[in-house]
Length: 411
Image (cartoon, rainbow, N blue to C red; front, side, top):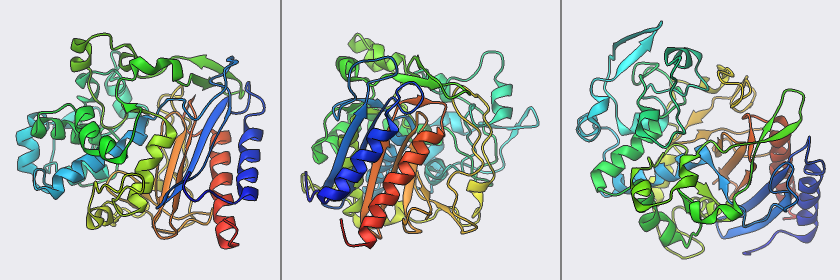
């Protein structure tokens, strides 16, 4: 571990994590938390069990379905190609040439499909302004696909073959846009998205055990859990079932690599990506550069200044088994919030700076990166539905503990 936190702060963090996992039936069954700075890992701890009803401990080697935490990795991959001039952020002709499906895609309005007014760019896909939604966050999209339904976790391209829910560029809406960014990458490089990431991100950063199909490592897979409205936990299947049952090379080639939600990872390995971005694109682990500083700056620049209250419109529980209702994406008073290239930009009550980037995974995983104050981290659980109050509370306590120690000079 590089530059570990002081012993009292480590003890306090472990205590908070262990307490949050004290009752595996009603609290958090198991969790891994990792904190980093630009020099690498500063703290890591696993607590609880592999899943509800399990006697096996959660460990730092446990593998998680990280779901939308995948989006950051896909954005990094796309921005590498933007640096090389292979992809353009603002060329709709290129988007339509590579993903011809997007040329004539329609917009869902009042139950009907209408022609889109504007054309789609890679920047829109990465900033969630292309117009795509998610069925579990958007009731009209959910209802439009009834009774068959769109399954964004199917492992098939058909899962993201959805209409738009807004005209491109006219609103922020969280959805499958970054899946389409990954499709652009695959078609321009001729590589599967996971193959590109392995060669250009994971290998340079010295990262192991991140993939779209961890079928050879299921012995380390954390179990997925479901919390009922009365707070009790039960076991449930993973969403990405096809990814966990890749039995042949043909299966592997047919698996859709979801750039928006498909990766499985060990938290310490994912955290190497966070410390690399805190270090302006250079890995403190391998000293390899994966992005230029100005590219990282662009990723952290607010791409949607005309939508300062996008995070306050609320998110319905369109599919209650997958998400709770969310009044605000991240409460921060009345201060304007932004969206970078794949993640939210916001301050908050923990002590984080206003330029902090953060995002999440549907099974209650949350990461943050504060380049101004030089700290970040990730908390990983496997609980559905999203926005689990016990996980959110623990994350806020851990993040707040780090900032309080920083302000007191006791890190």
